Amino acid sequence: MNKNSIIGFALMGLVLIGFSIYNQPSEADLAAQRQQDSIAQVARDQAETARQVAEATRKAEALEAARNDTTALFYQALNGSSQQVVLQNEKVALTIDTKGGVVKKAVIKHFTDRKGNQDVTLFDKSEQELNFMLAGKTTNILTADLYFTPTNVSDSTVTLTAPASNGGALVLNYSLGKDYMLHFSLQAQGLSGIFAPNYQAMDIEWSEKCRQQEKGFLFENRYATLTYKEKDGSTDYLNETSEKIDEPIEERLDWVAFKNQFFSAVLISKEDIQGGALMSSVPFEKPKKEEEGKGETYLKMYRAKMKTAFDPTGAKPSEFEMYIGPNDFRLLQDVEEESRFGKDLELQRLVYLGWPLFRIINRWFTLYVFDWLTGFGFNMGIVLILITLLLKAITYPLVKKTYLNSAKMRVLKPKLDEATKQYDKPEDQMMKQQAMMSLYSQYGVSPLSGCLPMLIQMPIWIAMFNFVPNAIQLRGESFLWISDLSTYDPILEWDTNIWLIGDHLSLTCILFCVANILYSVMSMRQQKDQMVGQQAEQMKMMQWMMYLMPLMFFFMFNDYSAGLNFYYFISLFFSAAIMWVLRKTTNDEKLLAILEAKYQENKANPKKMSGLAARLAAMQKEAEELRRQREANMRK
Figure 1 (tube, rainbow, N blue to C red):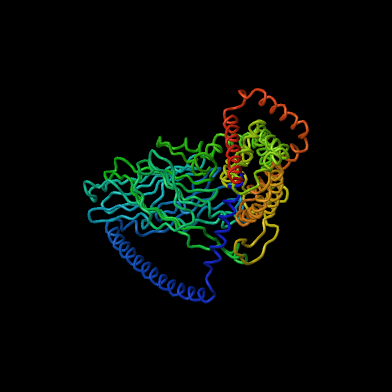
Figure 2 (figure 1 turned 90 degrees about the vertical axis):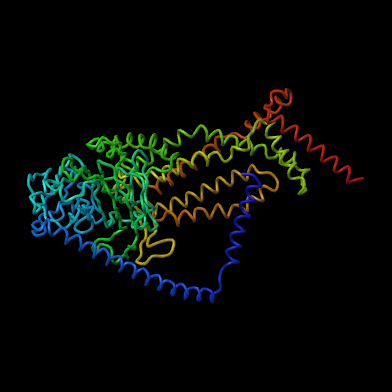
């Protein structure tokens, strides 16, 4: 990092600090602003309440009208008793309510929930609603209002029938696969006369209150998203932190997923989902410590309004599938083969691996290494350590080469001081830089490689930032003092939330930040040892920024998973160890002798110098000549 970069960073920091201080409002201004904000908030709340009441009234009137229409045709199915039919295998237990004919409870087996229960309940009772709406010529049909009669009941199949007064019926057929895939269809029998001749699409409304499944409410919220896949395209998702109210989707879709951090419910349609509107809202707040464990807490509210193909003649059923299970990359690849639709569903995209560059690293390196190491039955903490060691081994040759180049700059520092001492005036700084670059080139040293270690590590660090929080294999896994690598490891907890910190201190986050400070000290010391003249003084201006960065990381990562913080801690520890070993094993005298030999070789045969070195030497001579002419003119 050269002097201009250091000065630029320092000036930007000073400008930001000065600007924030200058624009800081007075206490009176703050009080006035708070009062205005309170008035404005009340007005907004009243307007929002009025809007919600109007919307609820409109929906209630529309629903009542639809129900009145349904009554005429399905009066038999509008009366009955709710029964529970359970479809289950070794992986899931899905409870289907005959009132509405849809899954009302989903239990994923063999995954302990955050309260210590043996299985994870993804949703239950009214937490999820799925309603099929059919618009006839004079009659609207809402499946949510109908009581279906179950037949053909087994552990994996059930047929649900809602009879109509004209002798027809609506039929739902369910079949549970061997893993997490549920196949089902909706078919109209003997009802073609009630629909318009050109009626070919039905409406679907699907909603869910997304349960908190993990200990870290805020951290899980970052990874809970409404995700969808475009037909013949990639996946996308609604912003996980902002409110998205009925955002229109114009593209045709293959599936829509209500996703938690580690579990998802995915609705897949055989025919394309023909647009619609998606909603993801964040109406829930993090529960206080004393409220935890008292009932269920929720992260988000999801809703999807969709259309898909419907054959009113009943010749062709509308077919669907639901994946209800864990977000496991390899598992999702395998389960997708159970789909009967022949689509490239790419369900593994539910495991977010980062932007394209980082996704490539995770997809084609990290995942394979992770699978290979876990295949040996190692503890997940050991797996993270081994991944770190493997990455350090792969990057070691380049890191060593970079360090040796920095060491060359360090041993050349006395010669640089001597060669540039005449350029002590401010107007001579450009010539001083040219003289330094020329001398470096003559000794065969590249001063631009000092930032390479960080450039090498950053893509890997960011890739792991995306991989570790989405690795369900870490969920519930303990290591040393860490009870669960997928969430934070509190060394101290309290009842109230403190701004920027929360209600706990994470030990692995503290270790990561301390390791970051120590590594920064070592890096700055190494850079200072190779800087010439005023550069060493200017380096002090950057020290406070380097010390503030770990503090910023603490506020960012205190809520993050212990596995991620542990990986960063181990990575920095090994980086510092490698730097220390290289420093101890580098003989400065031998290194200087090698450089002197290179210098004499270039001096004796200038043609062997690289093109850059030759150009820098020529520039140095021109700069020296200009300096002499300027001094001669000043003496005149």
